[in-house]
Length: 141
Image (cartoon, rainbow, N blue to C red; front, side, top):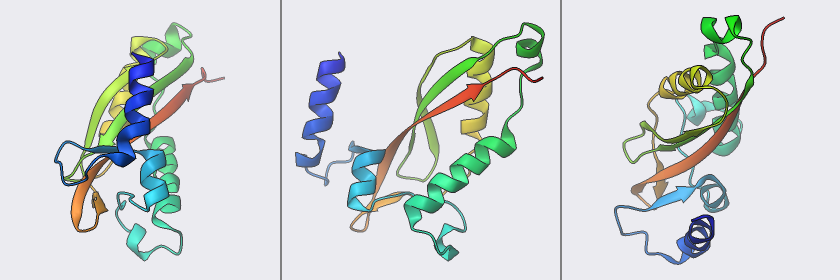
């Protein structure tokens, strides 16, 4: 399965972007200058990619809440969330891996609260862009 995914990612730049089902990986999108525009990033001095990355980091930090049950059970770990910013600028979670389900639920909650934004565009056509974000949970001291 991983080999198939790697082959598909390698062939992705060769595909026609007139198709509706295309999703660019973060790396391919960054190379091509196709980044969703986080609210207020159009007024930033940073590149859209730098602004997106900074806003995403800040969003995770500001919305992070260690789950009570995870604290009482001393749960820790890293949850990896794979999601897309779709053609409408909304978050769609594709896959969540790692750590305990209590931590996974919190990671999902954080990602779902990402604000709607202007989607990435190929020419004038909106396109979905995929992201993979690790969120590390360390029990509070």
